[in-house]
Image 1 (tube, rainbow, N blue to C red):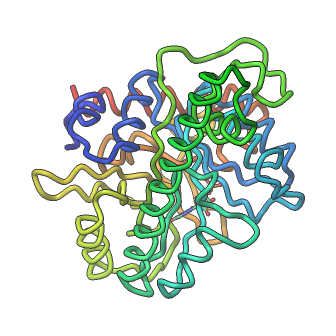
Image 2 (cartoon, rainbow, N blue to C red):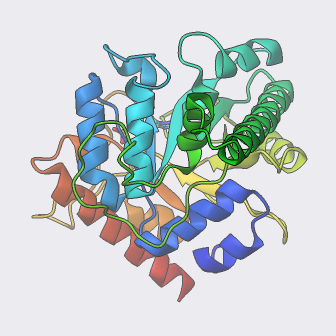
Length: 334
Ligand code: UP6
């Protein structure tokens, strides 16, 4: 798959969210995921808003945010989702679930954060075994069925009300708007983002996706080949839910594997010294350039945190990463 264009792979992918993401990448000429590792909701939302045009995925660690607001319709996730719809990017909660199946299901769908409700994508550390993936896949499928049902009930109730000459119900407006509200509709929640930025892309599909943590960027990690191979097997077994991997190289090994490889541990040397070597962070993190990860290792999306966030001007820096990542992809498929 490494030599195929994202557009071609969008047509081949069977997972609707994978296909959508590949189309988004083509449309925005971007294979950049921002790792928004900041500590307040305002910092998160303002980064999302200012870097939204350059990225296709925004990765969160919601538990790093000291004032995360859990309200499902007015809280941090809801506000982030509105920004995501507006700029056209997916939300990926980097939760790295790692427990028995029953517990990960509950952590995914219940508790304070209810991750399934707002994150298009999440991920799992498969060290506890394949059952964790199976359990999350089951929870994802159930969520989708419930959403479809709610949507249908809401829509048909509204049709009936229309026939009766009454207004649509608040309930169905909320249900429907969570997914199909046009980005610049007056209902979009009192946040003024100015002009609509992205045109030509439809709403993200009503699907959830999972990435399996198959390889890590950190020095001396224990994810050996046997573990990585089991991750690939598990992905094939749940290909309606698993979109791909967090890994350091493409893990598409068979003709019909259509998995995405999203890769953290990515930095560029400073703009003023482009030949400088990229070093680690002194806390175990190891970095590679977009050229190496996309161009040589077959990664599809680079995940960049501090390289962008800590820059003097994150907007300019995000654009530099987007360009480098995209050039490496274009060279790869040429
Ligand atoms: N991350 C890694 N390596 C992995 C998996 N995940 O760094 O193998 C995550 C980290 C962090 C981000 O949790 O959120 O990717 C990398 O941030 P950085 O670019 O600032 O190093």
